[in-house]
Length: 350
Image (cartoon, rainbow, N blue to C red; front, side, top):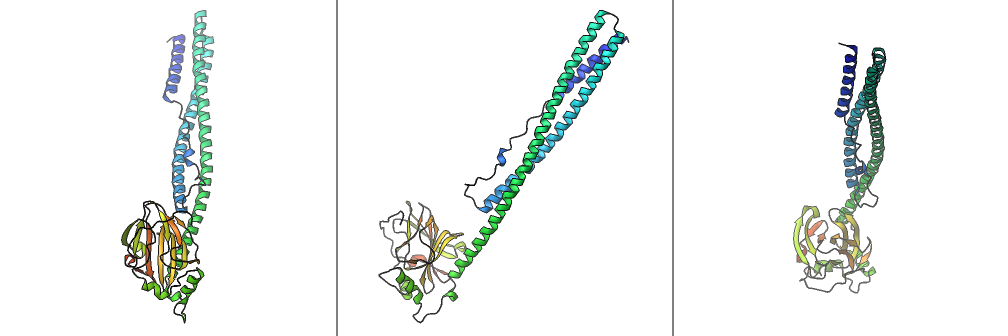
């Protein structure tokens, strides 16, 4: 084979190899947007358990994104190395072509031909170097994205630690509220009195009631207590272990004030699962009324309360959970209420 033909074949092979390499390895896609791992907003009214769950979801998503970026980085670094090898190979081919072209050229036509071939090799080499630069930029971008993920993980781990602390605090608070609620109905806590349970009578007097009913009078009012919602409403008699026994679900289409069915004092006014916002009124001699599911509590614990006084409010069609208790024992509430009647109610700020 003539030297000139061998030179031409060498140049054609180099051009073909470089062009096929460029077609086979298209540039990688840019990193995905990681904005979905934004922190929980400070104004979001969610509990600690929900925050903890949301943080765990974000951490799992972050781990998935990190694995994807690491795989992408490995692919990009491999492509960059390949482009570097191609560029070095082309540089050697160009050098060989120049040396052989000068040595073997026997006519002006050979010189022109060799110059054209070397020019083509240089163009391919320039594209290869450009692709190598693109790969390097992609590698740097992916590495920065991995660093950003590390910062996101540190932030999320901090948020998780805060959420865990808040959850422990919520659980401890709920436990104390539950203990307080349970102690309310403990008959052993009520001190003996020579006046036959006058502690409730004193509290009724402090409320300014014109009708200072005694403890015995509450038991005597079975079947005559006013309903806690004094407007047209729907009443369902139900029983649930979650609420400790029998209760009434009372709802009004327009919402309403919730009123104490008898005088006494507020033994509990706070949130407690499963009642939600809850008020318990102590009527003496271990008789209590329970008002749960409130949208707002209108009275504080320890406050004296008269019959008909507003203890809270309920939203439209959200049922009030109403109970009567004798100690820890629930009573059938319908048997204690008077015949329902429609009375105008002044919903609003008491």
